[in-house]
Image (cartoon, rainbow over all chains, first blue to last red; front, side, top):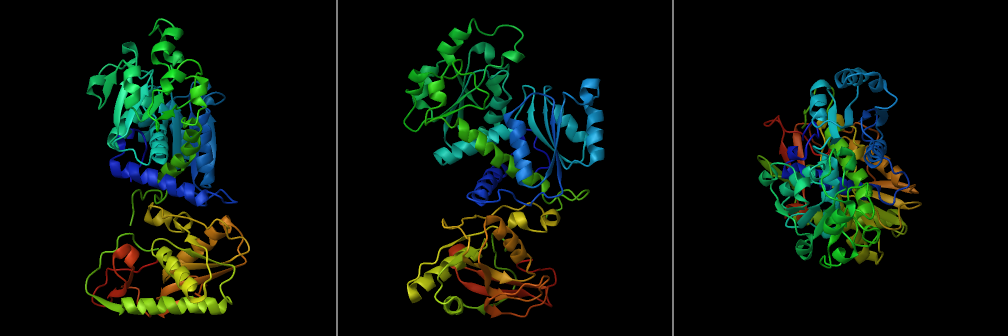
Length: 313
Length: 197
């Protein structure tokens, strides 16, 4: 098993499948129980280090760690020494001195989790770094697809919207490719990253034409907070060409699934009627997030006694 | 709990044949009926991997002997083990608790080999997070001794005195394509260790 979870590219097919299977067994173990808590990580400390705002991911990681009985320390940049100018490295040493067994980090700079992983002994879990990666989101998306469709292999997945600024898209492309799905990116040319032709994906600019041949459509939020200049003429035009409205949702095949990593901007990339329809898995995605993160924490943290990393049977 | 894939090891001796296992399971089913006075209120929970098919077999036998339907399921104990830090993360087994739950029921835990008793300790903790059974009993196919905890089985298929260096392997048709209990290792083979530790 791997020591850190920094990128979806670190996961080979067997490891990714083990993570998804473990999440599933955890769900079965907890379902219908009075005490929704497992003693597995008792006495371990998980630090949530969040340099960027987040609701879903932070709460989800916190719930996951607590359900496994780990001690959770929440640390957000606001109201910490970071606002007094402390560097990431000094923060890392502080965490190290506190004996953090795992650090869950979200950071606006791409690559920050990789740096952190060199400075601390515990496992580092990337909870989103800049426009780079968000591996646990990709895992929960793959898990949701597998629960709804029964498989990931061979699924035709369209990832639609602001691919350029999306760490979710990047991690999903990598993981879905590893798991054997067929990914097509749909976005205005200005919102596709440089070098996209080397990604294991197809690119399309015609959403309508693609929809009937798609099993899963994953909508991305337009990340205006990361946009310096304008990437498209107007919200209305974007929404017309790349938004998932009622008309477009009807073009999906019968079994077609609608996903969104959240937070949604209703009326822009997705119509409220579509987001709340039975074919939308958006609420399940959130619930599955806790299971997938529990699986990741379990597999990364159990079996590693300080100084004896990877001493498995 | 035993390893998932069981490759038949070095020279091994067959302790129980397919027919023997059939008789032993029959006997345990009868003992359960006798001791619980007709298996009313009984729930069988198998501990993965090989306790699960054993629990199913016991439920089938009890139904064919007395026509009683005994709810059965699986209880994975991996997350409750005390050696996770020492032996690394392992894949989880399935858990399925019958719909009626286990509150106020007579739960019989079923496993293939009873050795140190640590698996059963983990199972007891897992059980009390699921609900509050009226009573908990333990049924095992093989008791090989060497307990490290004050735990004993209520129903034992066969007592097999072993040494630590020997390895007891239970093979079941549902998983291994044949039924047998094998004993391997011992004096001439010191590196092997045992089943449920």
